[in-house]
Length: 288
Image (cartoon, rainbow, N blue to C red):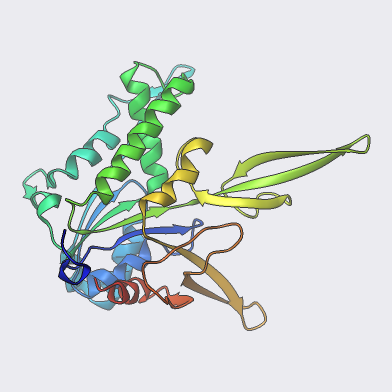
């Protein structure tokens, strides 16, 4: 067994959490501008934002980005909604993690990429929906024919995908972007008896109930609490207001809260990082 002093530099495997509109996708620009090669599985609609940030700073850096959009299409047939063809977004994303080829554009096997490359899943939330569509198609079911079997199969597919991303034979850096699922505790008093129920929402502003816990948004409640275990680093893209509430400042936070668990492989990470350069700063602190 090698000594720790003899081990090679390890790639960064990072989970970025954040609500919609906090700048998660656009924050990738700092890596491309610094020369990192970004390979993005684009399940979400954030490519135009990323491209705008890069183009404004250095249009030549756009050449560092290869992004492949993955989406399943649903069409209306009479009163029903059905898949327009076989759902392939999930299976194609999985295949691209073995061989990054899109038409004549062939960038080889991700297992052979180094730490100058970052494989990005944007986002885990939409990728989970693609896994669910794939599970439905396996059973010849439509978008509204779901049962617990479909959920169980899809959750297993998602976890295997995550296992593939963090496996030791994948030597490139990995960033997985995810929205946040808020678990709310609602207390109701009926005839002087209090009952507590749990429910979820996609936004902290969706209810006045108490936020009990927050997790990466994937598929169903069973999977979300297990996702964090696959990553050594998890940071939050968030925002605050300064100047008497008139100026919005977006930033990365590395500090966990009682509701949201975050973690870092950096011994003493900075509490906050600028959204503009934060990812590059974080990679450098990790030694990436």
